[in-house]
Length: 127
Image (cartoon, rainbow, N blue to C red; front, side):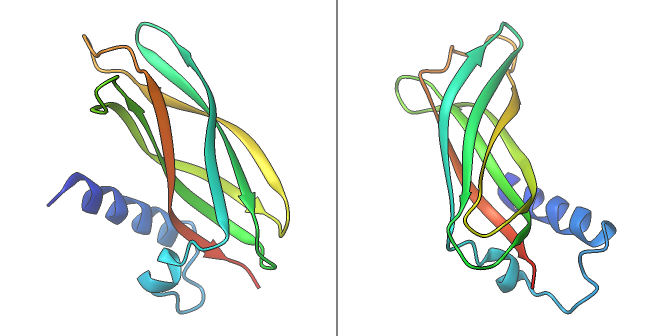
C-alpha cells in the first residue's frame, strides 16, 4: 500500500470516528475539492521541524465542515524532503479564508527546504 493510500485511509477512519458519516458520504463526495483554494505563504525552518504557513479559501457557496490537505517541503532540485499529509481545517464558511500554521517534521539530516507546496485532498461539505 502506498503512503498516499495509507494517509487517505487514516483520514477516512478519522472522519468516521468523528461522526462525519451520519449521512451516506462516499469517497467521491470527499474527493470533490473544487472551490477550495490553498497556497503556502511562508515557512519557518528550525533544525528538527518546519512550520509552513498556508492560506485556505472557500470559493464556493457551501460550508466546508472539514478540509484535509497535504503540505510538502521541497529541496532545490524539487525532491520532497518533508511532508505533513494530515493538515486539517474545520468549518470554513462560504467566501471565507483562513491562515494556518502547519508543523512539518524534518527527518534527521534532511536538506534545508527551498520551497513549499500544498494541495487539498478531501473536503466534507456541509449543507
